[in-house]
Length: 116
Length: 112
Image (cartoon, rainbow over all chains, first blue to last red; front, side, top):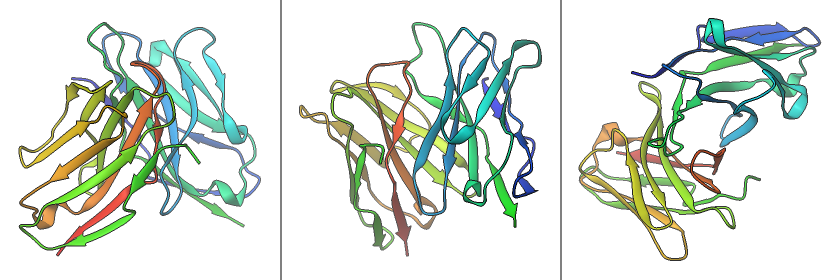
């Protein structure tokens, strides 16, 4: 069965430091990959997506992610974290194939805390 | 603002009751998804509609049902509510199948 793993439940970084959030997926083919962010009391905002092509994708708010097929990973990075980045981050996969309807499988989320 | 509108934002109801959650997708989006977010289960896919027809079902309880209307808005009906149904219910929409989905702000349901 398809699954998404975010190994880090909680991460704390200092403002201005770099950030990497890990995401691993289990699927027999290359899935569509997404990162969403959820601020407290808010909905899910799409940060970036990977469908095909260049494995390094740029997103909003200065985030980027790299798809590594050999590692079944899609890690999210940001070179310099701002206090406003404190939120919960979700990695999600959508499945290819004619039977794929676009539904997403989400990881459990990583809560990011930013220290001043 | 994603363009997906969910109402109401908050709902408090008693066990055994029935509620209806409403979702208006982004203009032009044909596909609507419903997800449930709870502390123990995380974000779980419930059901999807595409242009008025059901396209996929996840771990949706038999007490729950949904539909998508001709104007493409969708409603999620939850009946015989139990304490464990307390959760944040999200609606998302996408232009087509297999394209990125945009989420609403969610409806927080509390069953007491």
